[in-house]
Amino acid sequence: MSEIATLAGGCFWCLEAVFQRVRGVERVVSGYIGGHVPDPDYRSVCEGSTGHAEAVQLHFDPAVVSYETLLDIFFTIHDPTTLNRQGNDVGTQYRSAIYWHTLQQEVVAKHTLAGLASSLPVPIVTELVAAPTFYPAEDHHQNYYNQHPNQPYCMAVAAPKVQKLKQYFAPLVTE
Image (cartoon, rainbow, N blue to C red; front, side, top):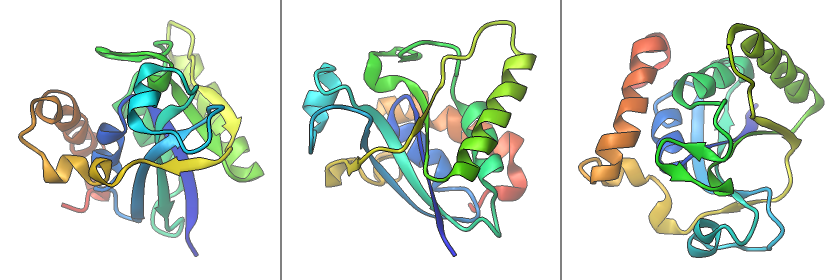
């Protein structure tokens, strides 16, 4: 039986590119979450006027990949210590956040965050929030990295994250 995980950690193209390659992740949808405007679009989210974060919603098989492992991957491929920023992407839409769907996910996320916090010399700024409404992004943002691997942003930012996945989680990589 499939479960859902929703994560925000910078540009959704990067998160999507990584999680599409994880064994047990059945579907990845890029979208927007955590804001105050219904049905936001990319332009308004990028302007920072909606309060939404770029995020991915993962449909995964917990018998193949655990929620905890998905969080481990998440924290390996993005920086949870930079407030509203991932690299050159700056703004609240690029914040680090875990949107939990079940109380069990909340417990696992709190445990993971506590363990990570004890190993880092600077504070973690990742938000932990009950999942509000998730709005899928426009069609041209779905499967973006796979369709545009030679686009400069994908080459400079997404590709290194995919490489990190392959380096640290090789047994889980599907390609």
